[in-house]
Image 1: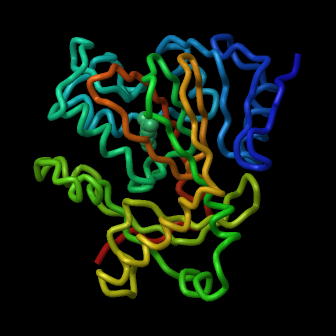
Image 2: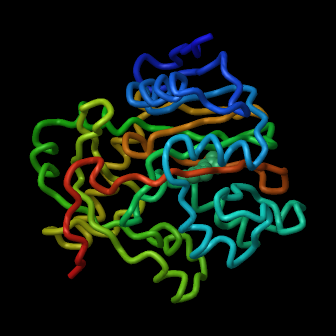
Length: 298
Ligand code: OGA
Ligand code: MN
C-alpha cells in the first residue's frame, strides 16, 4: 500500500498516513517521503509511537545521523536517553522528573522559542529534523513552522535587491546570550561562527529561500547594528502568519521537517507540566543549498 498524503496547507505542510515507521522503510516509501518533503517541507505522521532505536533507524534512512550537538554540549550536562543520536527535547532532569525553572534542560527549551533552522550555526548543517512526541502538554507548547521559500517569494523587489548578495554570520549563542544564559566560554566557543548567503536555492524544489534566523549576529558589509536590525526585520517577515503552520502536538505525532526550507520555534507552555519529545537530525551536505562560502571569519 502506498503512503497517503493529505495536504494541511496547499504547498507547505502535509499529513502522511498509511505507514508504520517502526518497520524498515522500503525504497519506494523512502522515495515518496523525500519527494513529499521536497514539495511540502513539513510532514506530519500521526500515531507513530517509536522507540529510540526505531527513531534512529528512521533517521538513518535519510543520511548520517548528527551527533555533534550531543557530543559537544548536551550530554556534558545530562544524557537521560543514554545515546548521542537522539536529543532529549524535554523539561526533565536526569531522573525523568520535571526539572526546575532554572535547570539547564528547561532553559535550553526556552532557547527554542526563537525562529531558527536547526544547525544553521554549524559548518555542516542539518537537513531533516525528526521530532517525535512522547508526552504533550494540554495548553501551549505548539511548534510553529515558517516557509522560507514563500518568504522569499513575498519579499518586495527593493529588499530582494538589498539581500541578494548578502552573507550572514550565524552564531549558536546569539539567542542564548540574548536570554542571558550563563554558558561557559568553552560552551560559547563550541561552534565557531559560520557564514551563509541570505539567499539560497533549495535543491529539492528548485525554489529560492530567504535564509535568515535568530542565529544571525551580523551581516557582512553592514554595520553591526544595521545588520542585526535587518536580520530582525527579515525574521519578522518570515514569521508572518500566512506563511506559518502551527502544530498542536498529540502523543505519538512525528514531524519531519526540512531545515533547508523552513524555520521553526517552540511556543510557551507551563514548565511545571511534563513535555517530552525526542529528536533525530540528519547531516546535510553544506553545498546542498548552493556553493558554501569560505568560512574564514574576519
Ligand atoms: C527542536 C525545537 C521546538 C519545540 O526540537 O529543534 O526547536 O517546540 N523544538 O520543542
Ligand atoms: Mn529546533
